[in-house]
Each structure stands twice: as C-alpha cells, then as structure tokens.
Image (cartoon, rainbow, N blue to C red; front, side, top):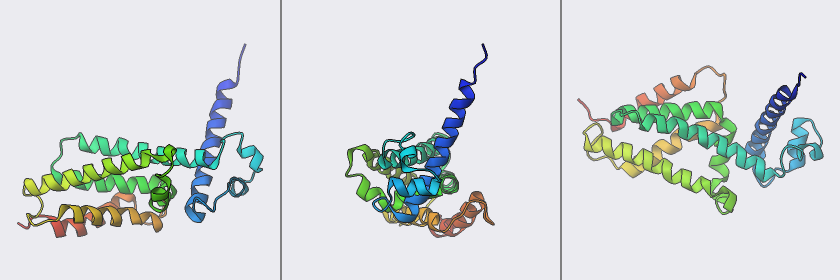
Length: 203
C-alpha cells in the first residue's frame, strides 16, 4: 500500500532547518542570555509551545546550530590540510574556506565569536574549546611550516600573525551579507593580497 511517510519526514526536517536558521539569527542579534524560546517562536511565527515539539530547549537549538557550523568548517579544513599543499597555498585555502563558512553560517559565526567564552563553561558546549584548540594548531602549524620552508619571513611572530589573521577573517561575520556584491572567494582573494604581501618572503 502506498505511503507518504518519507515526504513527511523530509518536510519535518526542512521545517527544523528553517527554525534553526531563525533561531540563529535571533541569537546573533539579541545574544544568548536575552533570547528566550518565546522570542524565537515569535520570529518563527508560531507559539512557544509548538517550538517545543521540535526542540526541548534553547540550549538544544544553540548546540545544533554551532555543531552544524563547526562540523562543516572542519570538513573543509581537513580537506585542505590533507591536500599536501605548500604553506602559502594552505593558508590561502584555509582563508578561502573560512569566508565560505561565513557565507553559509554568518549568524552561527557571530554567535560563536560573541558567546563561546561563556558557553564553554557548560558541559554540553565543551566541544567549542576542543574546536578552538584544533583551529589554533592548524593555523599555527601552517605558519610555522611557512617560516621553516622560507615561504614566510624568518622574523615572523607566528602567534601574533595567527591572532591577527583569525580576528580579521572572522570579524567579517559582523558586516558580510550573503548574496552581496562580492562572493566569499573574491573577498578571500582581496584579503589575501593584503595579508600575504606582509608576511611572504620578498623575491
């Protein structure tokens, strides 16, 4: 006998995704502490009780938003790091992948920047600290390899450079809007032309 269960599951998953997108925008705009389930429900055009059908708490929504963003970020980063590229090419690819993630998950990036220090104190958000450690290792090792292989200047302070690159890339989430005049790849290219001129060995 024919069944329509599969389309129902697909529709439920799509609705869940829409609600998470709405929640991410509300968290990014108002902050974690000021955001209530009712506020998210209001923005989603539904009753707060109906939202509990999909999620048991605002913490569950935020966890899924951040895990989805970081899982996709690390899928991209791991592909870059396993590609066997030179240090300069690796740095270029990591920056480009970062801007692509800002394009895909602008609100999640903004939440991560503003809330992660507070959230890591909660057990359910301990994964944020581990991701930050992995992030730091990936970038520092790339910069250190660049210095060792004479792709980057010998006098480069790699930790200071890492902090500069990290902060200047991810702050783009505060002004970038998907569908704007420039693609993430174009923004990355412009950004890299400024950064690499400062750290690369001059011919």
